[in-house]
Image (cartoon, rainbow, N blue to C red; front, side):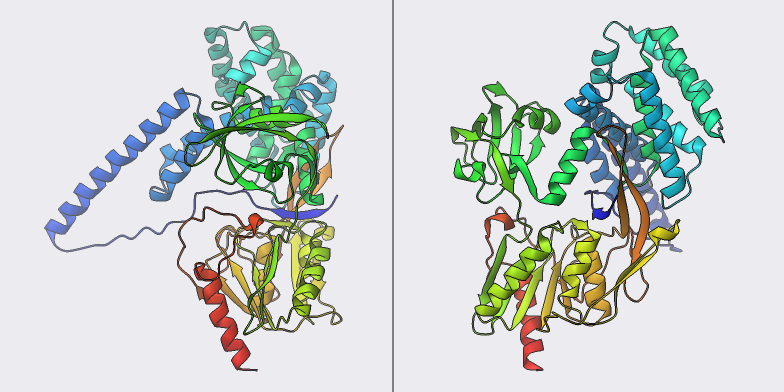
Length: 546
């Protein structure tokens, strides 16, 4: 097992509610009218979200509720609706994952129970916070309750069940098993077996799909960074860590009804060589319309062996339609796609780092020596949009810029989760430094931000970071599965942690307009990037003091 940090984008952020009191009756009347209007707007938002749920547009519903919770963060109705939509989206995503269907749902029931028991033991022993068995099982029961109304679950496991049959079982789950107290492993096992028997007797449902809802549902009681990994998800995770995978080299986002929007096209990939561009929308894969496919369904269709071909129909942002045929092969993901001098007069180098993966330290060393040969005297280190990665890699890259002292420490429930990492003097680069951060700079990027700030090593420029200050450890599960579990929190050199808060930069720059190009393609223009412009100004001041 090993420690890592990866962030998941969430749209719900803390909001401040201001309450103003006034002696004027007219002000009180205005406040009351405003509350009525707000209540009506909130009800309308909930109604719109419910329509998305009825249409089974689960991802759109999740994004919609998250967006509205920014405005009404205390709304219990919206929070419940978000929880419900997330649960349904997770179930649908699992049943679109061929590795889950083929390698987990097909397991014998005793093997499925072994997965659950090992998961619960790992959570009890290793999770950063104490979670009761009652809570873990309650979330499993909730997941099964939602699954019994999910089309993909029913089509795979209960194609002949009637709505009345599933409603009856769901009622029993709520009345007899939801939050039923359990305190021992034996009691836990008995409860799950009782539910399996209920589903077999009333629906003819096999035990394994039931147990799997308890496996994945139990993780819903943990933080958003902990999850049970199907064989396919585990392989994807390790590919990301290694920075290499077999495919065509694109990052996509589902745009329901339109297709799959290309968010990034990796350099030197089959997609780039085949003419794919950021902003293009894939509308068909091998002649099959994909405009209403989920991202997971489309990904499973696009996956294939190295050397195999895939034909895509693409629509450009301007509306032009074209076809391209790509050959899948190994694609190397660079964690430093851009390293160049952006101010020759002052010798300012620029490095864009998109992740902290196995090859990042080697890439960083190569980039620093390249820029040094080109006359670098100061550096802008761009961590905007960087979601994190490996803890030990974050320590290694920090060690290139800080000569002495603690870089980061971790604290968890078990002794082996408590560690402190310190700098080594040799090999330190001592040039003036600016680090660019934003709301998507998370975990390992925040380790860097905290250490640079606390050691007064450079200036942070941009916007407040994401606020993920926790460590995940990967536990290998049975078969090819895995468990990504939060086992510790990390702390800056001065002993501070900023989970769910984020780290405030030294120089705050307003949010820029959305970019249509990507860092992978090296589209860096200092003259139109307000963060880089602010970074250059900060470095000029540092250089002038030398």
